[in-house]
Length: 93
Image (tube, rainbow, N blue to C red; front, side):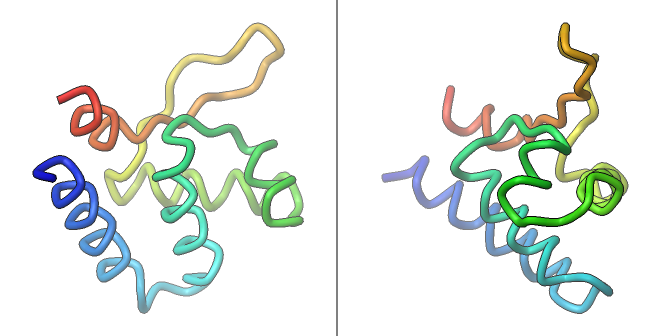
């Protein structure tokens, strides 16, 4: 139960921080999706939310700026990985 509470608190905190940011609907949707899939690519966001690739990348870069995800190295196919390590830390506990 402690891990579930930690994850819930993390999600609420991130959502509160981004609530009033321009483009917050997509940002909030992406934050929520991180709790399903804490490692994302711009292609995944593009397909999930039906936005352009530049828009998906801009959302992920904003989450980097906010300290919510970190950009990792590229995959063999050239996609950049964005990792919500705080979520993984709680889950791996």
